[in-house]
Length: 310
Image (tube, rainbow, N blue to C red):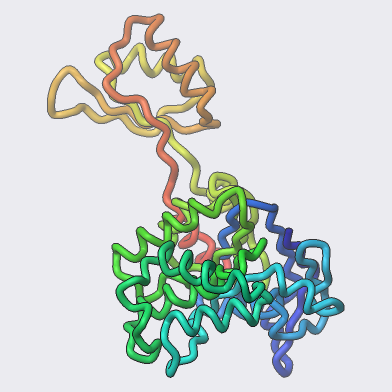
């Protein structure tokens, strides 16, 4: 759906973006991460056709954003960090204007606006002026405007900024409802959103791609590996079973409620390995109270990236 290759953008003598490649598959959600100043917003502006690249190309739905901009942009919904709203229009008027701008047939404008009001829970403010709305409601109107023409690619730049916890939950539910139907490129600092929503990640720092892959693959690339955590009644036999399965002991701690012991193991940990460990423990008569795969948080991976590039 989205294929960007070799994007470069210079401001004076400084490269804000240096050879960035991006790919988002149809129906998937890709998280676009990086610290402030990494070049995320500059990259997104090139992708949507607002800022011309100095080198590279962007293809959306098979169309070049810069050679065939009208056709390419028809497939894109874009919510920048601050939603571009007509502050002197009502929410419904703003959404209707956005629908017409994106080529929604006049006969469908009213129904599309009504659907977006419902999906983004804007009913209580639909007759209010956009300029009178809180930051959170403005973001929700911006999201509705980006979705009103049913784009095949939705690009979101810090979409949850200014939203309260209930609104963030609504946003997560919207993303889940779009999965499989709309390709989404999500730029955010809120790594919990990435954990909850994204199939793939692209990590940017100082204008360069530092890591790509699934959240688990990015953790491994940045040295934050999954661990196997278990509570058992026989740590000696449990450690032998772990070794048999190719894992190594990282920590063993006696629990307050005997006879249980908490064990943390490291190595190549997958659901299949977890299953082998479970079977080995059962075979050896070891009682199990807990046996879980715990992934290192992306916050830790992101911290390590910052340290690597400092």
